[in-house]
Image (tube, rainbow, N blue to C red):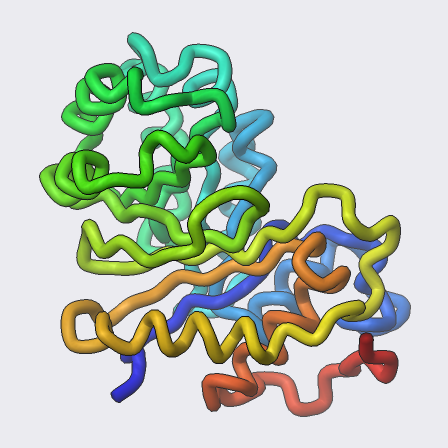
Length: 263
């Protein structure tokens, strides 16, 4: 049995380091997303963490990507890191409303909590989750170990919010099913590699581990979102392509210039 629908890609796409190893030589930054969307069917956008994109930018993203493409956007840091979700409901609604141009290409909204955000904030989190409109899907990432228990599972399941699984230092590597989809982030150690032109590490054993962990959930869910960071192996685009091949997904661009250099 296999996952019916994968939305796979990278965390960000606008990396000049990728010209020649992923993007074709001579491409301009304006052409990145169009090319990217012919290889991957999803992207996690970090840019929304810092500022809300203009309507013009959103329409550009919408019009330069393939029909089945999905954008997963990160909640602004003002909401998650500065306010810690407290009294942030109206700001969150403004953010969600601003994303309307993405329309049917909207994937889950990622709510990433800061490393010092502990489970003592449980009631604040519940108030926030309670206010989220049901028109969208949400995925939440915890970076403090105090959250990793049944109480958190019950809370997220109550509001059908996905618990993000990740490969990140000093956090449990596990899958907790709390919604009708899964969301995985392969992150690695921050700032591990100075340049992101090729993979430095073979992660095939890790891929195998994740697929074994996913197996029991295939009968319960049909969709999994998965995104790779440059810090995971040094070259997120190459690693995501390798993962697609590993799980027998077709390569949309057979002519696409794949890296010669490996590990």
